[in-house]
Structure formats: C-alpha cells, structure tokens
Length: 153
Image 1 (tube, one colour):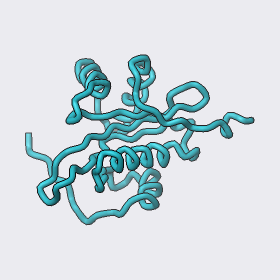
Image 2 (image 1 turned 30 degrees about the vertical axis):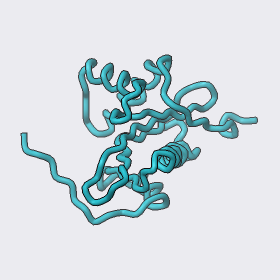
Image 3 (image 1 turned 30 degrees about the horizontal axis):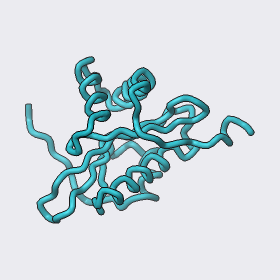
Image 4 (image 1 turned 60 degrees about the horizontal axis):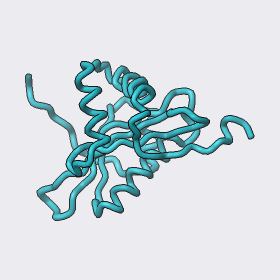
C-alpha cells in the first residue's frame, strides 16, 4: 500500500495533538495573513477540549500517523429558526495531502456532527479568490449572495 492509499481518519482533537494542531493552525492563519498571540492558541485549544456545548469543537484529519488537516466549528442559535446552526470557522489541509480528500472528509464530518446535534444548516466563509478551496466548496455546498461586513476598529 502506498502512502496515498492509506486512509485518512477524521477524529476529535485530543490533548496530545497540541503541537501538530498548532503548526497546522499557524499555517492556516498565515494563508489569511494573520498572526495570533500564544494566549489565543492556548485558549482556543483548551476550549475545543472542554465540555461547554457553546464552545468550538475541533476535528483533525490523521494520515499515516500524523495530523494533516483540521477544522473548527461551533453551534449557535439563529433568529430565523428554532434549531441551532453550525458555523464552520476554520478548515485547513496540509499542502502535502491536498487532492487526497482531506478537506471533503473534514467538511463531511462537520455535516455529520451537525446532523447529530440537530443543526440542519452548516455555513462558512472564504475569500473570494480562494479558487482552489472554492472548487471543493462548490461541490459540497451552495454559494450564497451575501456579502460580509465587519465593524470598524
């Protein structure tokens, strides 16, 4: 069996994943020209390992004994429906495994978690020029016409 033939396993984040998770999240943040302080890494990781249902959840993709992808998602209330919705905030696959289905597997795992939680809607944002990722997203979701605004500093 070649390395590419080995299965990708999606599983919840575990305490011992901190170093590999941090490396992947750092690479993801760099893609978006973002640097975060150590305290944010520590807080985010701790929250994803906690048991507060309002906190973020973390999943990782494991391939050949190493973590090669991650996703973070959170359930929240929505004013237009009774059921919670799921926001998929972060999704990243190491460039060495792109094209192996890691991104798809992570999104589908979030879809499955949303189904279990009774959250029929999963949504996320990406940059308009993120063409590689958008090719996958266009196969798994519907592009909306909404434009995002952020509060001025």
